[in-house]
Length: 207
Image (cartoon, rainbow, N blue to C red; front, side, top):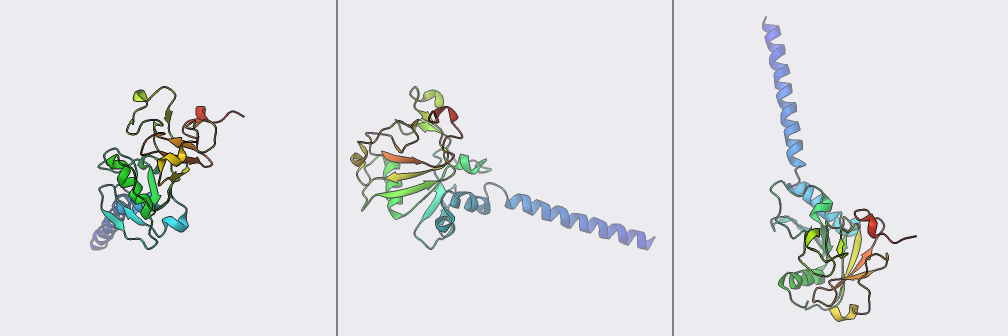
């Protein structure tokens, strides 16, 4: 009887430890966790940049201090969900250097960026869509006809002088680099990479 009781006790203890470990694993994989956000956001850039970048969380907190002068964070302007973004694509992470940080600050303030040079931003997870002509239009139903684009992987050129892009097309259906928000202080050059049209195949260039 004692042996049977002891055996049951051991089994229950092992089960409790297993469930606790499973719970911790599930919690650590939460999309609001630092672990998930760091992995998702830094993979928006090549690993030789993302692996050493500072990471800013969805609530504005620094999740990891970097060493290479680059920063990775969610670029989705929508409120950060309590449980985190459902995917890296929905998080729309971007990785940028110090000049890119200046561009981001100016863009959010609706001002012309005060930069020392042009810079680049990586968004290898793409974005969940926006009107190509007008910043802040985040629903397809509200966008201008034919101007909604949900992007796959891309690189962006953020210019010191937005006017330097005036001779580029804003047509995103050719496969070539194109201007987003043309004629505004937030104008920048979108550079499509492999898989760019996977979320919006109807915009893919015809063969």
